[in-house]
Amino acid sequence: MNTFLATDRLVLRAFTEADTDHVLALDNEPDVMRFINGGRPTSREVIQAQTLPRLLHDHPCFQTRGYWAAEEKDTGVFLGWFEFRPLDDHDAAVAELGYRLNRAAWGSGYATEGARALIREGFTALGVERVTANTMAVNARSRRVMEKAGLSFLRCFTGDWPEAIEGSEHGEVEYELTRTTWERHP
Image 1 (spheres, helix red, strand yellow):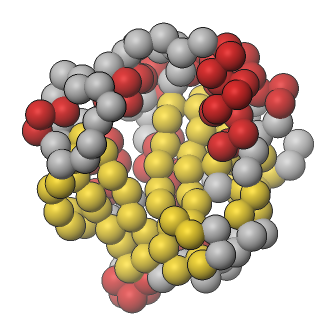
Image 2 (cartoon, helix red, strand yellow):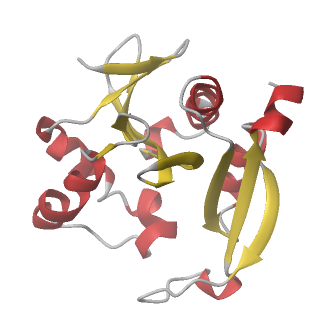
Image 3 (cartoon, rainbow, N blue to C red):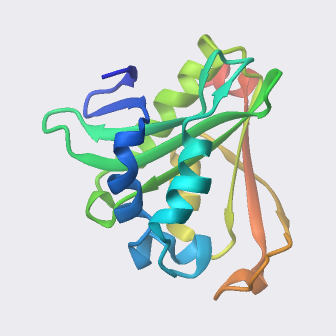
């Protein structure tokens, strides 16, 4: 197993092609995908042709991946994934934070625990100066994770949705955390 980070309860490791079934199951949980695509199912073909290449991509400025499979440390159970990738493959200054955990893992603090570990790694080892995260304005759970991980509300905005989903009429929100702010309150 190619472990990137470990916390008290999580192991974040590099994705492999063998994770196809895990990602397929995750992306076919309607509650998980509610704020991504309205809860519509995702085909195996889309996972293999579009999703896995993104999850397997190495970012030159980080010299590592930007998406990490999340497993429960004690059991090895697949919980979902975390994103911590540079917005520009050749500049580590700004990283985007994201997470997608299966429904059974919700409410256990895993998202906050993984987000905090990635933020710490970004600021201490990867050369990140600013972390950003986005979600739909109505996604209160994800917004709460961002806040608990130390990010602050920056702005509301309206993105171009290929297909409107319930809640998209309220727009999106962006949160951020700078290295300077994090160093004051790690």
